[in-house]
Length: 78
Image (tube, rainbow, N blue to C red; front, side):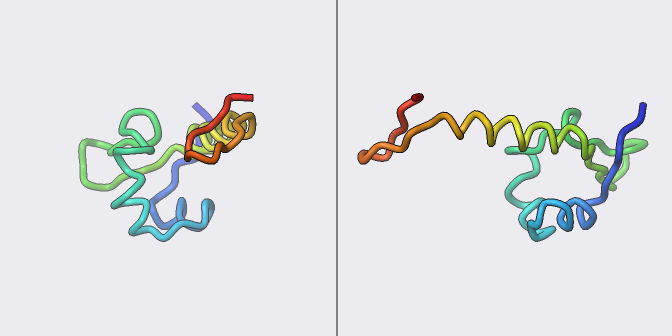
């Protein structure tokens, strides 16, 4: 296993989000336990898996690049 584990503060520096935003908005809605982060030894500390987060950020960005915004708020998958 050659993965990079980051704390919330380290992740916030890499993705340019406030640590509070990561904890309150992204964790458990976008960043999922067991996929993007884990709690070592069942404790309170959270470690994020950088490679998984980076891959998901780019894959979602590429998926949205093929969408054309419509006037009614929807999108056309062009």
